[in-house]
Image (cartoon, rainbow, N blue to C red; front, side, top):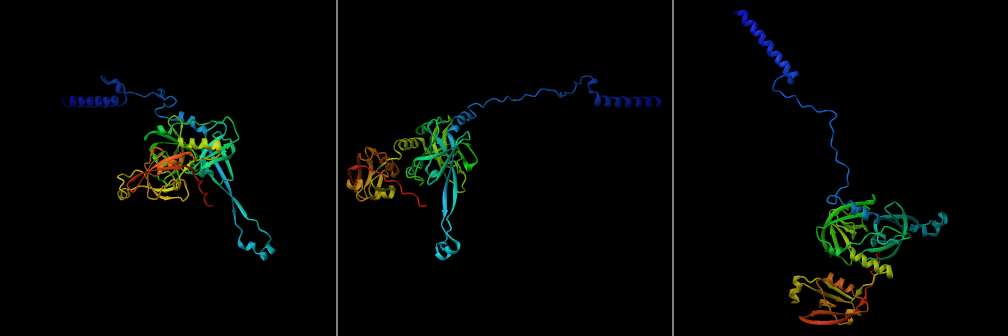
Length: 385
C-alpha cells in the first residue's frame, strides 16, 4: 500500500512539473489557450502625408502675398565730434598742427512697404529723419539706394523712392472695415534679425491721445511689434495692407502685446499728396483747444462734455479775424459736429486752405456763429539735434 502511494505521488509531481514547463514555454499546446499576439518587425507604419495646411489653420497664402512687398530699411548718418577747445589755441596748433574733427556714422534700421511697382515705398518719418544715406533691402536680397520724396511728421509717414521698375507692390485693404477681434499679421525686420511675421488680432480702433503724433487714429494690436518693425506692414488675413506699424507700448524695449499702426486710409492720403506735390497740406484756424471735462461743462453750463474749449486764439490768425474768443466752445465746424479736441483737429485739417468754414460756438450760454477763412497749417518745427 505504501509503495502504491509513493508511485502516485511521484507521478503527480512529474505531471505538475510538465504542466508548468508547457504553460510557460508552449502555452499554445494547452487546450482553450489562444496563441499570444506578436508584433511583426515588418508591420507597416502610417505616416501623415506632407500636404499644405488649410486656410483654417495657416496664413501662408497671406504671407506669400504680402512679404515680397515689405522691405528692410537701413539708414546712416555722419556724426562729427567737436574738436577739443585746446585745438583752437594757436600755441597748441603750432606744435601739433590742425587736427580735423572726428567723424563716425550712426546706423539705424526699420522697415517699409512697396506701394507702387515704379519704386515708391512708405515708411515711418522717424525711421529716415536726418539720414544721410538710405539703403533698402528687398525680400529677394537685392539692395537699392533710396531717396526721400517727402515726409509728414504730423502722421509719422515718409515716402521714399528707389530707382527700379516692376517691383512687387502690396495690395491696399480697407482699414475702415476693420473690427475689433479681426486677425492681423505684422511684417517687418525686428531687431535686424531679418524679415519676420507675427500674428495677433485688432485689440482696439481709433486710439488717440497717446502723444505719439499730432494726428492720431491708431489701430491697436497684440501682434508682436518690436524695434525695427517701424514702417512695416500690418496686413489682414488675406494679405492686404491695412496699416503701417509705428509704435509700441513697452517698459522693457520689447513687445508687451500693445502695438500701434497708422491706418492705411491715413497713409494713402499722405502718400497721394506727397507724390503729387511733395508735401502734405492741411487746414488751420489758429486756436489752442482743450478737453471739456465734467467740471468744465458744469462751470460753463454746457450740459454736455462734447465739443472743444477754445483755450487760446492766435493774434491775427484765421479764428481771431473771425471773432473767435478764448472761452468759446466749438461744437460744430463746416456742418460737422465736434466731439472732442482730437475730432476738431482732424476736421480742421481736412479743410482746404483758403476755403470758408462756418463754426458754431457757445459763448456764455448763447449760440454764436463765425465764418472762418481757413489758413494753411504751419510745418512742425524740426527736432533739435
